Each structure stands twice: as C-alpha cells, then as structure tokens.
Length: 92
Image (cartoon, rainbow, N blue to C red; front, top):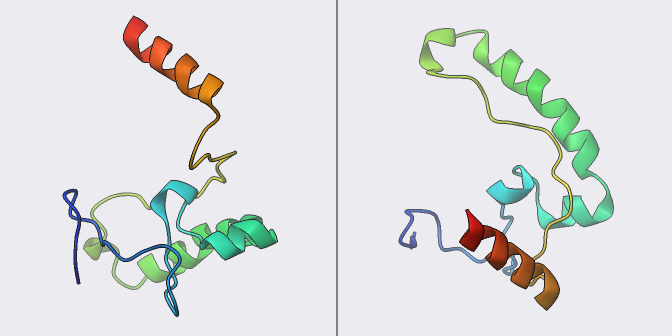
C-alpha cells in the first residue's frame, strides 16, 4: 500500500469500494458523518474497546483513542477564516 510522507495510507477517502476511516473525524466514515450515524457509532466505541481489552490487557500499552464527537470540519475554509487563522498563528 502506498503511503504519504507522514507514513499514513495514501488511499483516497472517496474511492470505488474504499471505506476510509479518517482520523480527524474520529475514525468514522464520511458517509456515517453525513448520514447522522456518527453519534451512535462513537458512543458504542468505548464499550467495544473495553470488551476487546479485557481478555489481554497487557497487550494494550495505553488508553484508547478519544472517541468524543468533533464539531464542524472544513476542507476548504472560507477566505476570512483562513486570514483569521493565519493572523492568530503569526501572533503566537
């Protein structure tokens, strides 16, 4: 499988027959997010991971991921949002 410079899979998020779990939307598919299934999927995750961890807890080096729902995500933010973000990063 092809990877990018960060070592992540370079498989496109929207491909024919490809189901991509995107980390910046907490490992739900874009379709789950758009159809409103994101909330129920993320609410089930802690219980699923807790159950998976019980048989062999020594194999788990740390806590599980953050399964909290994220807010709004922009692929291409409006120009005024970009300018504000750039100004804030320059001030820091």
